Image 1 (cartoon, rainbow, N blue to C red):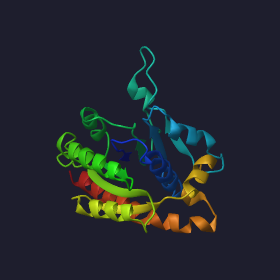
Image 2: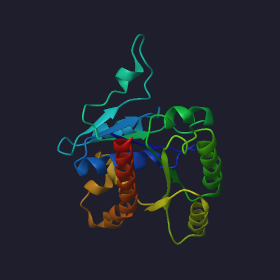
Image 3: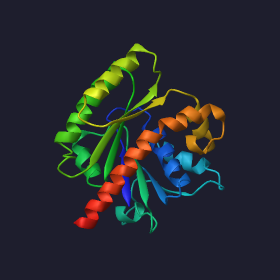
Length: 227
């Protein structure tokens, strides 16, 4: 089982879009997939409720819900036996003190960043906290960043691209600012499950991310086997 956390300290970065599309991509590729919704807004859970019955199944977990008396968190977060990929949609604005708890649960962390000065500044502090407080490197957790909701031919995107290239982290891919993701969400599907020719470029944008994740997953499995 590989566990992938989509997180950023700032809300509105499109992490739920990334989480739901990643879950649908894995499910469409034949992986037994679960989607954990840690965000109190419950957007990922709403997306799952819209998902058509004829699409590959994704097991949903409402991880943000408060526990009833005598209920255990382990029961609530249980995923079906044989689950191969678990995508965790983190709550918005994760505080530095909460990072270790999330880092301990996962193998890989994805950080979507928007092309704006505010988001770039926020991402700088968050990545610092992730490395220092979350101690991702000492825990063997892989971290990658992606540019989200971008328009390539703009000055602010060029600024974001320069920033991401300065990080000592993999800059994985760039996702466009397009209504295609909105239409997919409204149907409970991912971008890879749409057949409109206008989404072809969006599908291609996910290839570097998917290939990096699977390369990381394979290396992680080999290391576990040799442990």
